[in-house]
Length: 601
Image (cartoon, rainbow, N blue to C red):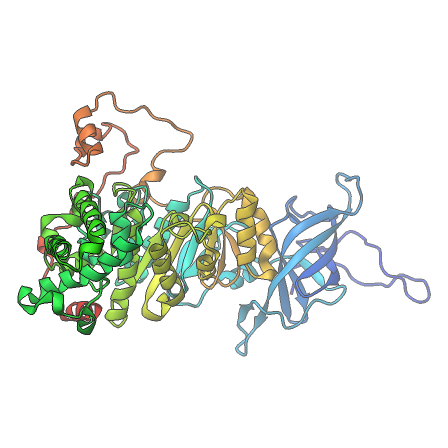
C-alpha cells in the first residue's frame, strides 16, 4: 500500500451521470503516478504529469526502474524513453508526458508471504493500471540473491546503498565475459571478480593469460607469476600442430615436412621410453598407442638422428631434400636463445609432474592463481604457448575426474579466438572452444576479456552465460551485446556508450535480472599495474637508466628490474617479494600421478 502524507490540492474529478463531480477523499502521494495506456508482451506505454507534485526533477528520468501495480503483484520495467506531449515545457506547471517502459519481470509473494522477483510475468498490466517509480524495498527484492556463493561486486547505479551481487557458482559453471573500451576499468573489474572467486572458492585454480604483464601486482602472495625468464615448458608437451607452429615460426607450413614430423616424432618417443634395443625402425608406433600428440618426452638428438638414418637409407632417397630442410629448421629453432624455455637441455627429461604442478598449482600451497606473462614470449610462438596451456587445463580436469578445476582467463581474447575463422591459430581456437562448450562438465571455466567484442568469435561469446558490459562506443560492439541479451532487457544496453568508468550493465545467469551497477573500489595495492597511472597523466621517465641492461633485455637476457624502477614514485605497485620455488614443491600427490598417467594413455 502506498504511503500517503496528507491532503492534496484539488484535482478534477470524473463527473457522475447527473453531472455532479464524485465526492472522494484525496491524498497527496509522496511520489507521482502514471497510468498504463498500452501494453504488449515486452513494452508498456504510460501517461503521467510532471511537475504536478513535489517529486524530484529526475523522478521520471531515463534509466529508472518503474513499478506497475497488477492486483497483488507489481510488474517491473526499465524506463528507456520519455516524451513530452507538448512541444513547449511549462516551468512550475503540470506537463503531460509519455513514458516508454520495457518490462523485465514482476515482484510477487510466495506461500509464506515473502516477496521475491520472477523474470516471468504472470499477469500483464491492464489499461489504467497505476505506475510509479519503484519502491526501494522492491528494488532490493529484485537484486537480492539466496545463492550461498553470492558475492557483492558493487552497488546499483540507481540506488548506491543497494548491493549488486553475483553468483560465483554461476560464473564458474557457465563461463563469463567482461567487455569494454580501453580505460573503462575492465582490468580492475576482472581483478575484483578473481579476488572474490578465490575468497569464496579457495580451491579454485585460476590461470591468467596476461599479455600486458599487469596482473601480478594485483594478487601479491596469492599469485605464482610465470615470466619469459622463468617459463619452463618442454617442447614435447606440445602436440603436432603446436610443434609445427613453433618450427615454421607462424609461416605457411610444408605438407611433406609435417608428414615427416608426424612419422618420426612417435619413433623418437619410443626411443626415449623403450631404448634402441627395441628396433624402432621395424616397430609400428600405432600398435603402441604413441602418436605425435602423446605427452611423452623425447630427445631432439634422437629425432635428428632418425632423420639422418632415413636420409642414408635407400627408402629415404626420394625425400632426402625434405628431411634435410626440416632438420635445418629444427636446428635453427633450437639454437634461437628466445626459445630456451622450450628447448633447454633439461627439457628432454620427464619433468611433467613438476611443470604441470607449477603452472596449474598442484598442490595450491596458498597460491591459487598463476599469472602467465605473455609479453616476453616470442610473438611467433605465443599462440602455441596459449594453445598448450588451454589444452592442458582441460586435459588435467578430465584426467583427474574434475578434481583439478581451473578458471582460464583470456585477456585480449580477440587475439586467440577472432571472429574470422581463417585468421588466428586453429589449435588455440579449438582448445578455447572445447573449454567453452564442454568445460562445465569437468570443472573447467572460461573468462573472456576483450575490448573488441565484434572481433571475437560469436560462438565462444555465446557460451559465456554472464556478461559484464562496460562502456562501448562502437556501434558494431553494441550490436554484439544486443544480440547476447534477452529480448526483454535490450533497452538497458542503450546506455552502453554513456556509462561511467567502473560502471557496467551485468546480465546473464549469475545475476537475477540485468542491472546497471558500479564495481567496488579496489585498494591501490590490489589493482592491476595498468591502473596505477591515470590515462590523463604522463609522468616523466627515469633520468638515469642502465642502457646495457636494456640492450641485454632486448636480446633475451635477464633484466635488472632495480635499474628500471623510478625511485620515489608513489604510483608504482611493488610486486610481492616471495617467489615460487620449484624446489619447495612436495612430492606429487597420488591423485596427481593418476591424472598424469591418464593423460599419457
